[in-house]
Length: 191
Image (cartoon, rainbow, N blue to C red; front, side):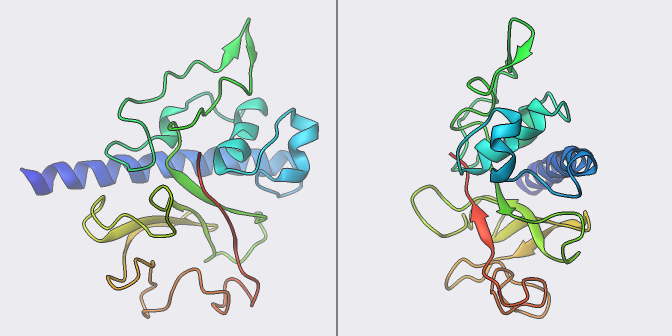
């Protein structure tokens, strides 16, 4: 029973992360191939540097109306209850209501776009609050990762330092990995 429940939770989270990516692709098609970015805050009426703040741009651009796709049950980052999906005030999306602290589980590699390296991790499990480590218990020593090419999967965590490793054993967030081209990724964690 435990394993079936865990598999169902992983399947639900992978579906949600794919829905977030679908919204991001729609957003990018209207913003010169760029995913949500701090440079677009003024244009869209948002502010902040967390993944929550950047994902608010998807709501204000009309790409999604669901906060639930950002939430993960049993996450050490999100609240115990799903978000309320109340994002409007008097019929207009309100940034102050969208993705409040505890509503979003996903971390985000800021600065990427549709022309970025297809294997670059774009969305992934957030680190445990107050740490730079992934939660090994959430997915049984795995982490969920969605890449620019829309592939999404659960990847093994290195037990010693809680880093996500690729099939070849390399740290997925090592700046020397081919998909980063020597530039450290700009990781944005949720609030």
